[in-house]
Picture 1 (cartoon, helix red, strand yellow):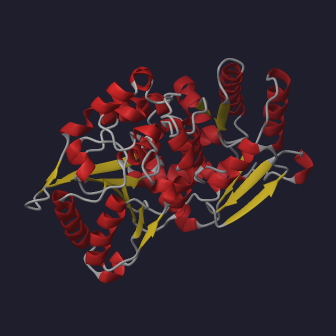
Picture 2 (cartoon, helix red, strand yellow; picture 1 turned 60 degrees about the vertical axis):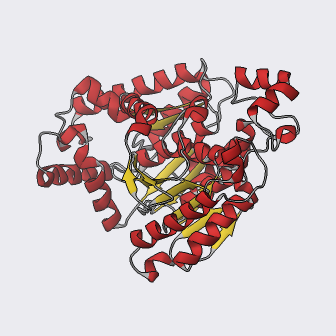
Picture 3 (cartoon, helix red, strand yellow; picture 1 turned 180 degrees about the vertical axis):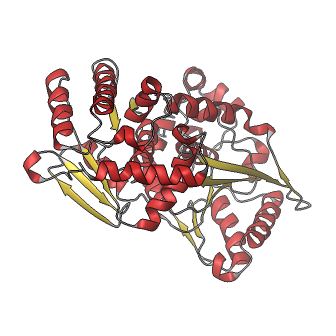
Length: 434
C-alpha cells in the first residue's frame, strides 16, 4: 500500500484481505501502524511523524523493517498473499521493500496499490469515521485528535513522492476511491483478479438485506434441491416481507433505489414477485444465485439419500465443504460461482436486497463477516428471517428480524447469532493486533 494518511489504505487492505480469504487463499495483513503502537506506544503526536525528527524516523523505519521481516517469514512458510499496509510514501522506502522481497522470497509477485485522494470531504469523513477511534487518540477530544491528525498528514506531505514509471513497479493508482484508476505493468491471473475487485469498491454507506425465499413445499418435506413453488406459509412470509420493506423505505423515491437480486428458481422468483409488487419495483433474476446443485440427490430427503447413495452420504458427512454431489456442486464450487455477485453488491451504491437460498446466503454472509471458508456450513441463515447488514469502514453491522408469516409480528433476534458473533469478534481482535 502507498499513500498519505486518511486515504483509505487500511480500508482497502481489509477489504482485499476479506475477499482473498473468502476465495480460499492464505492471506494476512501486516499493518506498520500496529507495530509502531506496540513498540513505541500510543502517545505519539504529530511531531513523531516529522521527517526532521531523526530519532522518531529511525524508530518508524525499524517498525517497518520488523513488519516486513514478519511478512517475508509468512510468505516463506504457508502464506500465499501478504498485504504490507503502511504509507510507504518515499521512493527510498519502496525500493527497500521491493529489493528485500525479491531477494528473500522465492517466485514473489508484487503489486503496489497507491490510494490518492484530494477530496477534502472524503478525507474529513475518513478521519471522523476511523481515525478518531484509533488507539492513538483515546485520551484526546475529537477536536484535538482531528487537529493532531491533520498535522500528521502535513508531515507526510512534505516527503510524499507518488509512484512514477522510473521506479519500474507494477502498480495501480486508485484516485478518490474508484473515481479514476491507473494501471501499469500488471500481469497474471491473481493480480488481474485483485484489480477487478478494487475497481468495484467505494465508501458509500448502504444497507444490504439478505433473506431466504419464503418457505417452500420441499422445506416442509425436508427434501433437498428441486424447483418447487412456495407453500402457503411461504406466500404469507413474502407478503409480510414486502410490508416490512415498504415501512423500511417510507417513500417511493427511496423504494425505487432498491437493487433487488434473486435466482431463477420458482420459490425465489415467486417471493420476489410478491415483494416487488408491493414495493412497485423491478428485480433482477440471476442464474448465478440458484441454490447449490445437488445432482443425483435432487428432490430426495436425507433419509432417502442415505439409503440410495450410502457412499455419497458418508463422504458428505466427513467434509461437507469439499464434497461434490454426483453431477452436482460442492460448496467450494458455489463460492467460485457467486463471486460475480460480490462484485455486483460491492459496486452498488443503493440499498441491496438478495432473495436467495441457504447455501448462497451462507456464502455471501461469510464474505461480509470475514468468516473462514471452513465455517460457512455452520452459519445460521434461518428461514423467514431478514438479515440487515450495513458495511462500515472496518466492520459490518448486523440486525436480524424474524417475521411471523401468519401475524406479521417482527422480533429482533440475538440468540441465533452466538456462533457467528463469537467468530466475528474473535477475528476482529486478532486482525487489529497483527
